[in-house]
Length: 484
Image (cartoon, rainbow, N blue to C red; front, side, top):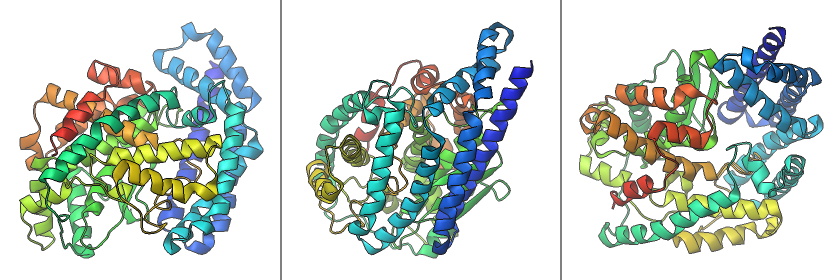
């Protein structure tokens, strides 16, 4: 069928362009010297324009129309390819190529401005780039408007079908249920945060050792350092992870396991989906569920502490397992999202969700953002940021124009807990296996029930197929109650 061959060839081309864009973004954040920012922004804009033009071309619509009329002749995989291609094509056709290019350039430039502003803790220096990103986000949302709010339109890039109203319902439950758990933790915890003096060079050896235990090798993976940890899947056998190191903190190993979860998801997608429009994670909520599962349900599992202690000892440092365990689950309000414990973490996301909705919908002026940040930080977590770097400038997302991404972190934590409950129901408790770093069964279960599907199933159908029930907050609440 010529139309199918043509469509598949175009989708393979678009997958290659996407991989090149991912490679350029990885290089910008992990390797590129600061002086390359302007040139990289132009390069990213060119890639985006090429991908947009090729992806929205009239002939693609013609192929889709023909294939939809002959759906009975297609197998299940090709029907899914056509179904998702139609969704993507219809959405992308609403966005002018010039705007798509401008969004990509503004994201690359804004990221560079954010990095410099964060280093100097100078919000004012970030304002022009942020203002441009917000204005472009509104323009982009207007192109996509399907009758909902501008923020709903932006959410579609990360979680198809998710709405701000659905998020408010879920986050409202978290905002009600989590504070009493945090308060209970305050009654039983140590007066001071658990301190661990772990030199950076020891952390580096520990992180590499832990990643090796869960399946990272030197043939298809690499690990680097970045100001904001991230992962990049360039191809089925090319996964780039990053973390960051601070003397005396465990954030590096937790962040590395988080990014490993992202990378493993992409690597275990069914091979027949490679270089198609289905060959990626289905949504950012599901993607974040995979990173949160490895971070919280493996990395912070009491049994896995033995692996962390073992890798610390291999790196030349002796540590009391109880002290290490206490540091991993030290529940207390904090300033930094990526260093937050699993109980308070979702409250950081509620804060960001409320603020970015207000920015996009025009009810909060950018000049008032730092004050609004402090107000919500105090209300939700009872703490105050001493400067912009540890407050409103701590995340890269708004600098790179990623409005609508933040909710996926909390949604991911919820889905992760639901998946982990089902995994242990199917396989039995994982305590003994995790105590010796044996995660083969976990990897296989996730590959079979989550990863292999790629984009063939949307978020809620995937969760229901994997667990036998719809998205449910209760497993997450049960999990965090065990931590205090």
